[in-house]
Length: 263
Image (cartoon, rainbow, N blue to C red):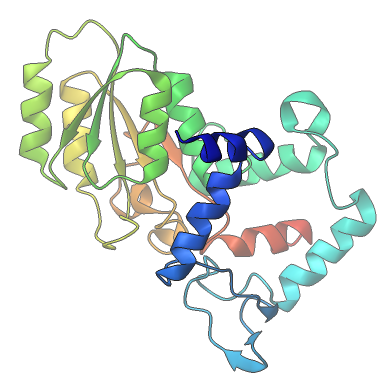
């Protein structure tokens, strides 16, 4: 480092960030956030009405009358926040009621609501498995699944996309693995929109004594009876041990209707 650069670093240790931003700006690579006005489905940008094709509000009901009125009533009754994370003092009766309703809807034993779908995947995988365990994961699984696997410190093996034979090859090669084993897949894959071969993967989970986990974020509200997801769509009830989803996409209707006590 030159003497001049050293002096700059001493007076402003974050100068390099400014330099990098200036370099990106010079190459026209610097990204700035578009400031939008209006609701999710009725947006204005630079004074022009635009259509939002990047929203998670798939069905366009997140800002509908039922949702907004429901949130307004809940705001009057319990306020706009829990005041703390759930593990401290932020679990409210409404959380418990929501978990009961989701469990009933999904036809499962119980449900835990996380702060987001991403944290649900990352938190669940790292909670269920540890460094002595094995994860067998589809190569196109969501980034939150990948992060959860890394956090767990488990051994991770990736099988070719939707390739049941390749998944079984990995299971056969690790037949004597001493720890717990988890097969995990998206139900509907977020980027391609294709559906996992869930019944066949459940067969493998049963054959090799694995935990079966499905991320149904992109199929909940779309597939299955009333939007119950791929587990229902492919008749795999009782065969999938862990399901993960999110209320931020097609299931956003739950937030408003539940807040309005309409479900």
